[in-house]
Image (cartoon, chains in turn purple, green):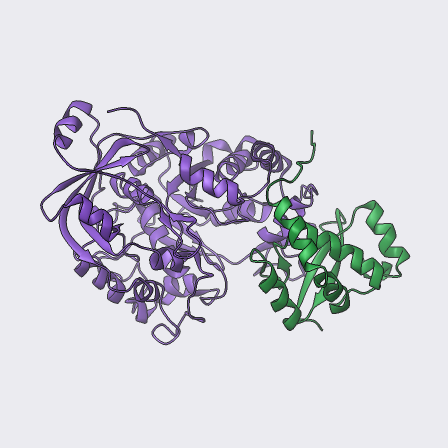
Length: 452
Length: 118
């Protein structure tokens, strides 16, 4: 065997976290006599629209996407993350993850350390939280600032002070003050609704699927968008990285969660990526669109770190990162994700890239620039190799075109993908997420639960 | 040279109106000629006004102002033809109707007719 062959990495932390009880009788015994709490969405601290639902974090933790995290974090762990982006067990991790409730709810519940709390979702038992610590967030704004950084503390990459126009900052600012810290366990597996059900590949299943397909090397494409041809070329070309041969598989992992107005609906994003392979633009046998539940924090380099963790846990060997990765606005330098993976960001606890620090990641970053249409080459061309003036593609330009009912030229959006956009446009009476979609989505969520 | 711009897409009807307004030389042909548009140039100050008026509006990697309501783009096209301008003049005339545009935008955020495609 060649010494250049790359093997699939172990999960982050060395083992995959799986905290799911599949035996209903055992689950019933586990929750007998325990107090219950109905999971509520986190509401925007001013407008009161939903900005997060902790159920998505519970799902991603218990199915192992966030391995080695096992639950809601204690105060010491949150403080360490804010200081060094490390868990108490040393493994790197970017964000505080907490189960927060209001003071009134805490009083009503009357629970404390050592208690087991049953968490209901849509009126049915869903998970348990074994409380190890109860602590209070003294100032959610300070937590939000520290989570994302400031121009003073993180001058390498933070360009503007975060504020209420940043959806991730708003999530932390809007948290309730009381944190119940401890491990989560899902005791009633939710059932994904169509079309999400066929894209649900939690890490163990993803790794099994890679085995089945004979994929040793897999490159991940992060998405929160319906794909245009620029994305398709990014995927196809980044996949040439591999080792002795191009990557065997391209994993598309869509982040599914609270949407911003103007984004495409999650349903169109999943099926839009699927249309890339059903249309034959990337062979089905080399391409797998999947989902992960998470209310995006839009933390650019920090978000890329979480993406690296999720995709390593899913079994990917490579991860492509582009400009303005998981970013919104101009809070971060537009190349800050690539700076993190190229050289590290010392002020965030990374004197070296996340792959080169102790207890770091093994997934290999593939930092890419852009693909756009070259009228001279008459094809999609890479910004660093094509010497002509090119016509830049942007997702928002395409959204503007779609909103005006103009079918994008096939050279920038495949007709099969546009068909998917129109399908969900007809379903929701609107091509993008509007307030109605956001509110309904947070009521209905992506899953249903059976009686236990 | 303006800092930012807004793309106004042109179908056959609009294409003729732009030519009739004497702006034919400014028509740009994108993506192997499959897309026709004019760019309306926007100063930094006017860009800030647009972003303030419409909370979905943003600038993209090309320095284009995007994600503005369709009603804004429609009015901008009319003002380009009316003022025969591809600059701040057309944008300012559009922003003068901002209340009307916001009313239309509120309706369009509930419903936009989907195109019929094969």
